Image 1 (tube, rainbow, N blue to C red):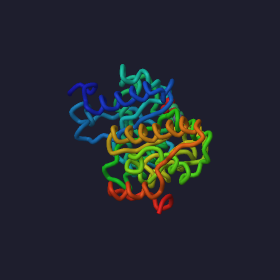
Image 2: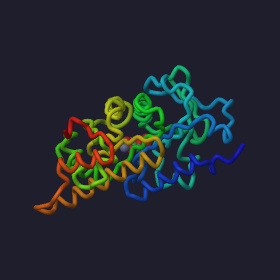
Image 3: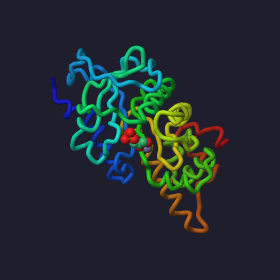
Length: 270
Ligand code: 13P
Ligand code: ZN
């Protein structure tokens, strides 16, 4: 077997987690990441005929039956993942009936995957229904988005247009806008269901006063989306210290969308 620590997927996963930690978004164990792995990319590194430790799931995940997921461990510090991915994350295989998963690699001391596993699995299911190339879910406590969620009306149209209006590239990168769910208790309750419902339409969903959940076909695309939205939130919070500032108007947003052949959310702009 090849050394899994040298695999492209572990490198991408650890590097993005480290980047998010360095961005100041993921203090302590804040945030969690999951990455759907293909059997053919995993099999050179792991003996997949072996059974793993059973972990009970809190949702019905039969739509992901047989799928492999690289995911951070609950309570594990982002700061430590890159130095020791095996102690801070794991690879799970979802059972055929979808009631449990097997932990095939990592978290050897009996620890468990993230407490947001229900959100991750439900969001993977939801995104795969609309995009069969989907693979990554990132939850992070992005700083300026959290600040903005404390001061701006939590209306999706309002919030999205505030972000689109501040950087020319934004409507091209997230033409569907940003979804928002009500404030919720983290973990296995409603938060996962609400996020999954939103993430079908919006590739990024705001958890007010908590963080965001973003999806992507690759680690880069999920992270790049968060970076873009987070920077716009930072601009919004800085610019609001000034009494008079310009934003990109609706007519210009429509021209941008048309020039870059993206379809902006029709609820937000006509
Ligand atoms: P975990 O440590 O269980 O992943 O929880 C962190 C978090 O961000 C909860 O929302
Ligand atoms: Zn969180």
